[in-house]
Length: 256
Image 1 (cartoon, helix red, strand yellow):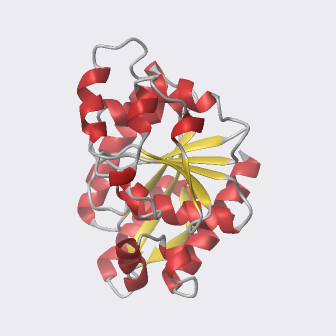
Image 2 (image 1 turned 120 degrees about the vertical axis):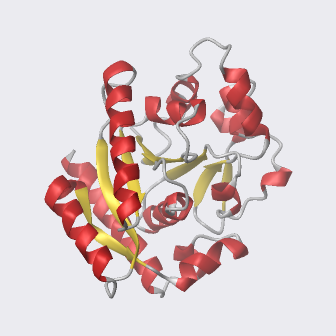
């Protein structure tokens, strides 16, 4: 049975897509079967996995409107080693179209049920806003992985996200929980980042992942080559940190 996780944070620019594609590539490297679901109309997770969003014949848009199944719409990324349910600009239109449909927030859950036995992990890259798309992700997920920078404003955004998750847990998905907080773009030389990191550990305890993703140029360069950093430069510190994070995720799932 697949474990479904949203990579979410209502603050933009915190590395959600970088986390999604690199965790997926890391999990694939340690022998897990992975599906990445791109729920962001910008399609960055699709492009960052080596799949051209402009050439998609079927996408997550078709799956949400039930004109295609996941099996028909998914593509395999040979370079990255996992499957992708891609997105492009069409998905922005789904936001409006879903509003009038039945089971509008449970469309993705129904679609993913058909491939439940085909994967160990399903990772959903959510847009930064709390939209109907994000709600679809949260309604089908077992948990949320929150990538965050150790900065003051990131703490404020985190409290908004925690409230959102509580509301979805209470009203739509009783399984939903925060799996963990992932510290990304971390620079130990900056005093404030160390202070915020300590605050996170004091407040959230073991909900903070042990793995820390360092600020790394190779991770930032990788998307322009259409690859996750883990594949683009496996020897870089960022790539090695994501593979270690993948191992930590597998261990955490075994104890859930």
